[in-house]
Image (tube, rainbow, N blue to C red; front, side):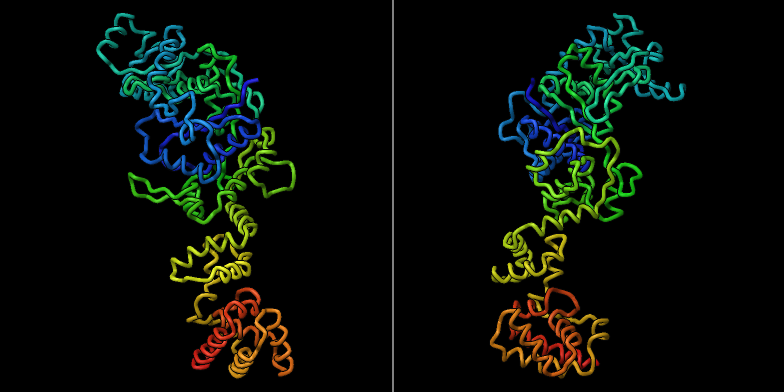
Length: 508
């Protein structure tokens, strides 16, 4: 049995879409599950679409997500089957183009863009195939001498594969089962262009997969219609027995399930569809990424893994090791998966809760420093323990905790109207003095003493506690009020009480 070898082969045409990330993830999980190798190959044969920086973006994205590459671009050791950029493999492909030409499996076409456009205008739904090629400008219709002269004169041409009609071509797909397509509907695709001496995707990916000993091609559903052509290329080149197994993954759909997920969906609904931020070097446009939006990489991985794959249990939270252990192509769905961005937030919330308070506090300290606060580590850890469950992202922590670091300048108007009753200023002033007299410093001890004091005074517990929260926080939110007092300290709490009385009594 051959060692399992899979490849992720994106084109460097811009930022890596989250659908591409899922393809990379499934390849990685499959390789690790089967003790195989994961390759990263850059398919850059279309030089007109190349975007500077895109390759580095792809490598950084996979690294951030923990999708490690064993061989190829971004690997510690490139490997024995390089180069791994198709633009650097130009010298390799020509041999196989010539083989197809010599075997009569391909032909040279000289048709100009104007000639092709004329045919499209003349013939509805025109495609270059067995029905039309003998009326075109190619080596099947031109005298051999003329073809030779045109080549000697460096006339531009393309090489097209020669598809014979009337054959049912079977693709055995590991997800979809047996898929059969009749060759009559397949056009004579261009497999090589003289203008840049490079093959098109169709030939290049087949040649590279064969030479790199790829055993499984796991890719998006959009490539399923091209699979019969690839099967034919393996056959024509004499490699049918070494042909990899195919698995075509379901599409990632818009949140409403109507169509393929796009950048516009993210812009419209306010969520990222790329792993990292990307600035288009041509237009300056910014593409938002999951990393910069505050997502943990392990949350993104967990979320993506379940978009199209079902573990067969009710388990939702998986470590990478658990995903590797349980992943199988047999449980990948044939139908598209809706991109539920609220579920993505849910996953991030869960991973935030699972992280130790010390780790979260360390990350949050950087935000505090940016805002001008240098705080004791133990204090920050305590605050994180109180407010972490209210946050989906690290960036939410400031909104949930700012009152621990700065006294309120304003007080929620609706809360004041509802909770700041005429008797409150006098009662709060008493409470502030009582706080300062307490020897107890822990939240539990303060709670017991303050509640006994309120009961003895026959004050309304709920009204006074809400007023105290308003004085300390500025609004009616946050964890236990006694936990807040413990973190602030009795002196700071008393100062805030005094300030609230002065501000709100003056307004009433």
